[in-house]
Image (cartoon, rainbow, N blue to C red; front, side, top):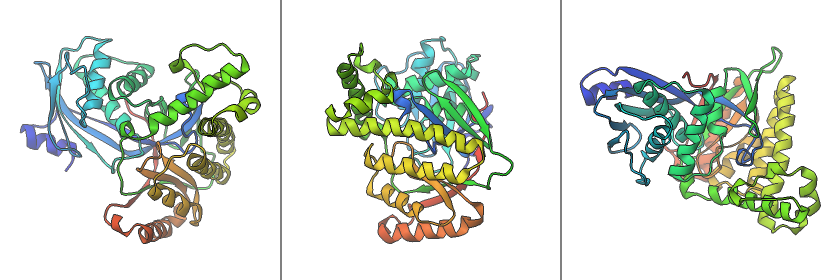
Length: 390
């Protein structure tokens, strides 16, 4: 059932509006956006759909086709504390937007996601989709940067996930058949087109069959370990430092890390080493894409995945197995965990000529190791896409 069909079934009328926000994948730039490093990304042609209409009394009423229960509150007085359910992301949006623009008109809405949850920035896509609907209902026009900032604030302050701006930026800025290359230090970005002589590619998504929640994972701990490394490195190097939450590895050149890395506790050293190596891979990957070398780009993406496992130390046994199978499957240029790496899925850039054999090999090899996930594991072939239309 689509969001539009569900809306008609629930409310007995057609929705006044519909909207769509794509999911994203990040082939290079794993775990560095929180420390203001450079990232790459694609939006894909699957995502979150919303069907909605106005409620002049200011009530917000939202249904989801993926989760049970109706969420309801007043647009101007969303609960100040999270309710620990699927709609917390939406309440966070209401609060962040209402802080900037007084909200009066509510909405009734149905949300629907096209793929299983986990690793494709579904939370950011839901937030952006709902934010765009709230703005339309209240006659608010946001810039792209405001959309990204408000969306990030909803996750950071209300939901409690220490995410950066990678997900939202990809879902807003991306363009079909272009690689988004973005520097999180100053939000500057470039859309690098695929060259005419680049080998053909599609984007494959391999779901482990396990869903995950960043708020309940070790995601925040990894971010803080990297921040602790930055704080300690500043002290060792005699660099002035301020608040812990305003300390980033981007504040320090690679030379400072190389000089003082041996003084760091091992977990902090590994997080920082991943950061500096990944920043190098992003820059090299952007140049490889620029010259049309998708095979080198894929090799770097595989290296990113290995670093996420060994240095950032993410990945369930299921995701690590998927990554390992990808590295030895013919026709896959490269890939890594998609998202934070706690359950969820892996993404890969593949040669379309091998699409069928890749899907067969991945399923056979994975379910041989995890037969209990038969019926839950799934593979999806996608294309790159434009970002959300504001």
